[in-house]
Image (cartoon, rainbow, N blue to C red; front, side, top):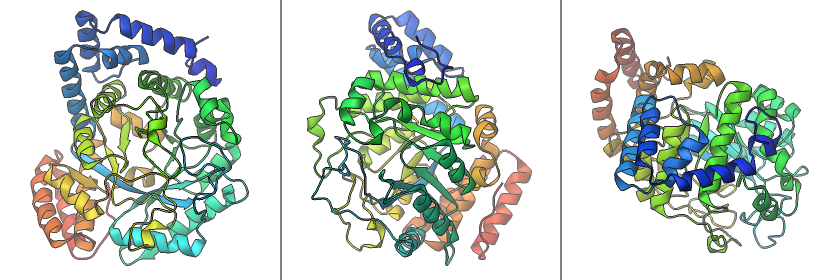
Length: 471
């Protein structure tokens, strides 16, 4: 029985409800009146139900699909402006006891090099990331209670926050590790993490159990209910995601939105972020083995439909995707991207990009400086801001500000100030010149005169050597 407020995975992600939703969407994919009314509702910026959004995803009317894309772009601008938050993944360990069929870290893969960073190696990786200009990391590790216990993760977080190199600091660590206990989530909260991220991989229970034949991740309910335990443990911000290509994309889309509705129903706050990774080639993994792969066109439509369905949620796209795909996705709702990423354990300290411990092939292999310049040339503001986490604007407090669009009064000046830091400390001369022009032009877009005046003063102080101003 479907119940969004239930704490049981099979009730808030109800297979029968998803099947009924997909049938309803199929029956109405040419219903112009209904689709038009759903688009009109979405234009009110209050979001859509999983069933309404599924109708938009199924829609086969070209002009109405174009309206959805246009609305997605407008919602992105109105909630997040032209800012794009920058981050990088940091792989700590690829030891893993699970048997996931789509991941090269699976326990039976005997020819991948297994590696776990020491605290000294974590320090070296962080310094390399700081020297690139990063301020926000997402740490990643395989599930292995012997090699990667929670104590190891906590030690790594402590090490990361302790490193102050030149003008570099990692100001926020987000965490992407396996489902764990309320007690362990409480420990992560106490360690000062930002967002806890966990990809569902697939919401289809039968497929999930097939794709995770061995290891603790085999337990569908325990994995799917992880966000509830994380929030019970005090973590305000959680990030959802599915690995598109494992199961039929419309099923995953409905499940993803049902999960978001569940978090709203139970905790009063939806997901802080939604990620949209696709299955990619990796060691011992062939994406063609999964027959549910999706085209770029469908992928972009998914992004647009998520954006109109959950307008308040940050959306993340990684270097799994090419420059071309990322460019289109930015217009349709993406608000966070990685740059200069390496998906191997210890990869940032290597001069040449290592491949022996990569989790997946990186499509966008540009440097952070190249990505920053590319964003600015496209009219976006690369933001290295972490102010909301450090000012306590998380969970329901962030969502209230975001839904009312008051968050813009903080985010725009913070983005400009952190970009100025990047330009002073890390940018190439060409990138710095483009950035200086962009900042000068964007100052006029700060509506509050007092905030604008303070921002101008802070920007001048940053040029003189001061750092870390924030609203």
